[in-house]
Length: 208
Image (cartoon, rainbow, N blue to C red; front, side):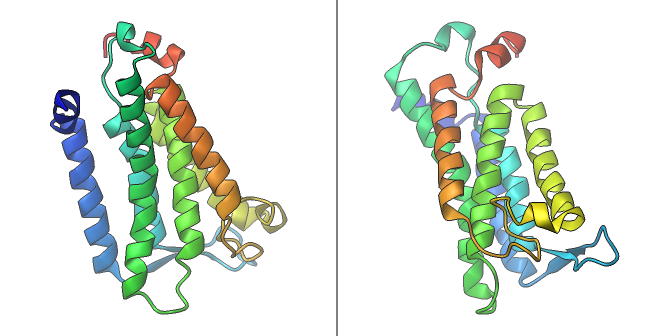
């Protein structure tokens, strides 16, 4: 358990816990607050609730906070490191995705929290892969760009948005659990195999 104790005591892990609790409290305090995003005057705006926006922001940040600062020689087939990496990856998806589920107890019965939970889990998986490939500094930015870009597509091209596994467009308001699950499993597997840092990222950030 020494390895886990050291990991849980690390600044990044403590920060991740604090940010997660703060995100949950913010969502609960915000209630039914919804932002309207309108990029096309003739289109119905994209209604973005706080219980989606805040968890997505959290999902983008968590992998960068939770990735271990490993030396290059530690990227070996060490079973305990792989187990820890897998646990961290699952937590990085589960924690943000659980916030809409918790929030729904304070929301109206018609609030869309099931499809939003799928949205958050999907972008949490994107954040895992982005952080693994691009590093803990660029990874969150890539994940947020993917989220903003998706909202743009939902406004600018509803026909294309209908084919995406992301809810929010007027042509696509249903949950997408199975595509989301596939993406999450791929992301967790990638994080587990690479311990959160691809070979390219490990070489580039060797002294980080």
